Image (cartoon, rainbow, N blue to C red; front, side, top):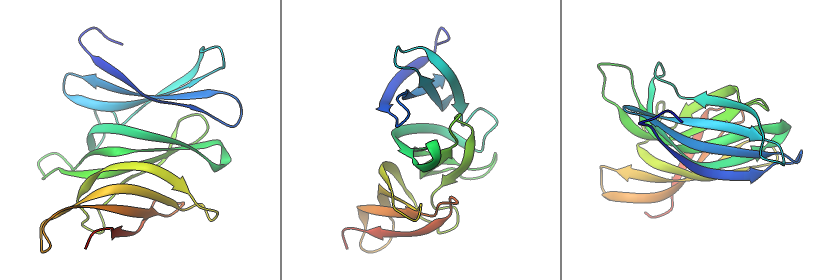
Length: 168
């Protein structure tokens, strides 16, 4: 860590090949980012990747969950503010797929195509076809008003499939 920054350990997971993976939250005065580490069984760092950097359209990314996925990939879920400079930034659920070395394969700020607004992407699960189901919270600004727990479905290619409110 750099002096003046605040880092938080979020998740450590045993992965199928016997190594450990760690997501850490990294804050450098303005931007919150995701730091992904791969560790050996003794805790030695094999590699690290900084995801959602200063030049990204995704700001203040907060990671919540890490899923070791098929093909030695990882799914990271959380939320962040998506938007280009000079435009409105909406808080949206965030789903990121990385390869086995932590390089981003795809990144989805859920709601860019559907208009969904919400946060807190949690507890990702992968089905047999490679799609992902993720719990989240939907901000409803029409009747019925209020926030609703929901689940999101994301394709194996990182595309929005649908969301379902769990309270109507």
